[in-house]
Image 1: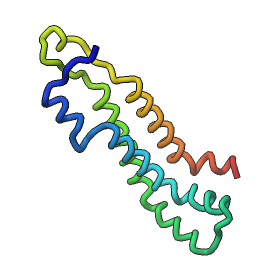
Image 2: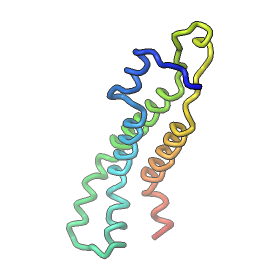
Image 3: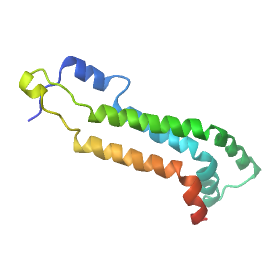
Length: 128
């Protein structure tokens, strides 16, 4: 049985800081941060080559900022999913509502995918 959400709670979850959007932003920023390492490998695997691929190394100077932003977005999304949400009823206000399995799976998938992208500089050496 699903519990009704208060108007402030539903507004907070459907606002611009929805956890799914934060996780999508985290994966996107970690993918952009790894372009300097994974980009040339992916392009060479597809048969595309050229001297212009060295321009992808411009992203390397932005790596610390993008990696920090990605980790911050994941932390913010995890905090929003894990925080205790009070219900309108006083008896239910004392109980904690755990995130749904789908939300937790999305969080774990985003964390693993972001870590895969952000650590590509290190594991890529073993692959090539």
